Amino acid sequence: MAVEVRPERSGKVLIKNIGLLLSGDIDHPILDADTVLIDEGLITRVGRAADCDPDGAQRIIDCHGSALAPGLIDSHVHPVFGDWTPRQGQLGWIESSLHGGVTTMISAGEVHLPGRPRDIVGLKALAITAQRAFENMRPLGVGGGVKVHAGAPVVEQGMVESDFRDLAEAGVKLLGEIGLGSVKAGAEAAQMVRWARQYGIQSTIHTGGPSIPGSGMIDKDVVLEADADIIGHVNGGHTALPYEQVCALCEGSSRALELVHNGNERIALLTARHAIELKCAHRIILGTDGPAGSGVQPLGILRMIALLSSLADVPAEIAFGFATGNTARMRNLAQGLIEIGRPADLVFLDRAQHSAGRDLLESVRLGDLPGVGMVMIDGIIKCQRSRNTPPAHQVPSVSTP
Image (cartoon, rainbow, N blue to C red; front, side, top):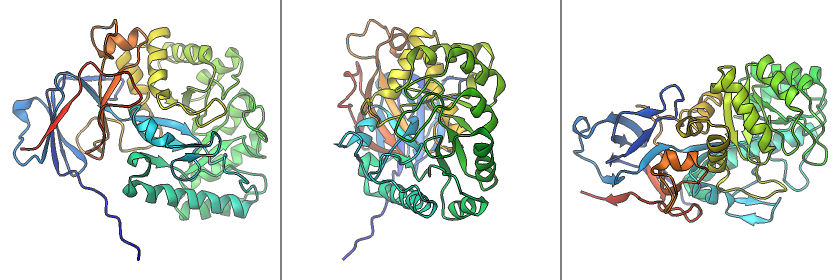
């Protein structure tokens, strides 16, 4: 007999003694506050302790001076079903990413499913099934309860407007990477993007050399003509375009510039610097592009933050914003910012033990990964001291009144 699974409720939660509060907003990255109140999964108050009424709190979290940030968002993953990847024959990769501070993942296509259907009926059926399956997975706590936005069909030649309408009506909100299927020409891709946009479906385009059998080279002319919402792995997945073409994408488009762990690190650094010079840093978002041939990267987003801060001279608080508020805005997500009314998807951080950095931000600027002391989704603690990061210098403690 089936038993209905009811989502856990957070009740009222008080987070106090925050030493550093990162907002996720790159225009105002650090908040002058040390206390956050949560009620039923939403942030209800951000301020000083004297301004936040603790009465009725069912759980009190003392940060002991450590940092609090929005949960990290991985803008580019390739899930299949459940917390399993056939690409690497590995279980538990999503939960491992939770231990790296990731609370939300965005699918760029369920492309690693063995025997993935490429006919139009089949690809639509797969997208709808994946969307439903990952939506239903969260209350069960599979993958640690990470919010996986999945069901991203890889478009194929022969699709027509009504196919996009059908997908949207079924709840599909994403397209997988354009270029991983048979649609590779700019004009053809542009038509698919227009149809998707008409029905409220966000599009991503593959950028650079081929990554899997069946994918192809997508150069800057195709990317610009297609005008997809997200320029997927602009630093290559794995092989990047020449830097001159990447500059053309920064200068000739207003779309999101996605930098990924499984790409060309040199181009990632140059792209970040160029976008900042062009005063369009708000377009930079971060992903891992995993699972992939290079494996699974539970700390991939933290690594990208440390890479950009230490080698591209991006202030650490801004680099955290690339992985949170920037992605939230480009991806139309409620989470990713510490603001009243936003979901309480949070990561508690501190400098790693024995880091040369004197605090979290300095340690990241020096290239060290921070330690994760706790991760929360919708106000509910999903893990405490991370099993994957170096141990944090200070970790929060939990008590009940």
